[in-house]
Length: 233
Image (cartoon, rainbow, N blue to C red; front, side, top):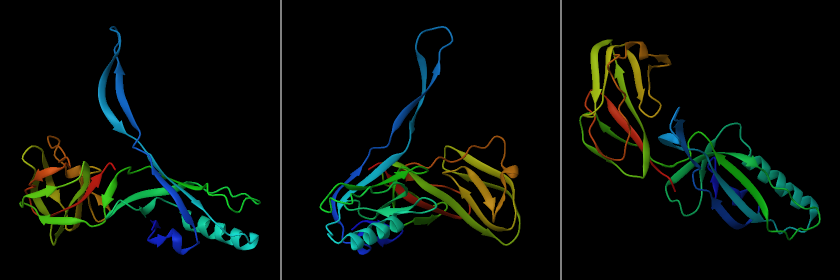
């Protein structure tokens, strides 16, 4: 079954799935031209977008019923923002996508089997775990997957706290003040806020954000670490 926004494609129309093609993540190199010598300096590799193409048949000879099914498939595929998709052979993993290509049915060839839906993953091209894991700060944990996880630290403060720090043993994030309320430090996006208000003005200039990574980690401080494991395929 193919699920988009937790609704199965097969539940909205009697489609016969021919194929599901998941493209690899587009990779590009960030480089800096040398001003004198030939060539360029390699800076880093960049992961871009990926697509999911679903090809299917709709074996309905009645023209009106066939068009009604196409309309239902279009409504199922369209969304105003990227939404979670689950596809076969990727158990307990999701990919946030938005539809970028709708089927082009023939009015004559009701037996055609090359109707296609194209979805594109823009903001996050990685498959991520359907469940989120958590541990208390100071507890060792292990992150599986082959891509950097989505990770955040949360804490609820009944009153403002001063000189607070979080560290993984390599990088340390220090805040001169954390106001009262619900704090969220998003390690993946490198932001920190209490409620909807940023607290980055309290972030020490000598601090560096903890980098989410796979493998064993321990983050010291006060609060709870949440993470979702991610995969490139």
